[in-house]
Length: 166
Image (cartoon, rainbow, N blue to C red; front, side):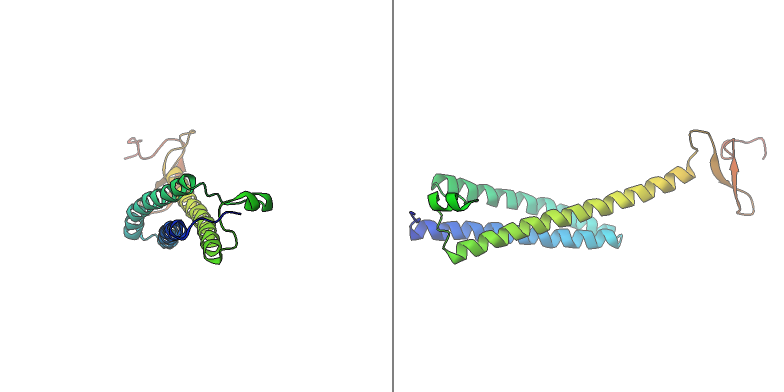
């Protein structure tokens, strides 16, 4: 198996480190966003959203740089033992292996955290929809209205629009 020269290896490790740092930063922002969503901290949600977009762009650029470098130097990440034998990537290099494992783990963690954020947003959206549905006339024109004493009343005619009882 052919190994890349030391300069190629060091550049490759640098690209992997940059990509790993970007992925780690994105994961931290995703964790912060899910916490903010859970606490309904809308200021933090807005800040995290802007920061998340910037980090996603940085991660995409870092991934593209690594992929282009690998293609240019005909390096590949082996998926099987057979591919490892044919690969120019030194699979016995502990530092490269550790970086790939760390990057893979961060990608999985970002994916899982993003799913949690999606679930939190979905739950909040469903809650708001239910509240709005209860306060709005339904397709049968029934509406939840309030009497002068604050008690609730259901009426087939929307009391909000029925001025005959005033």
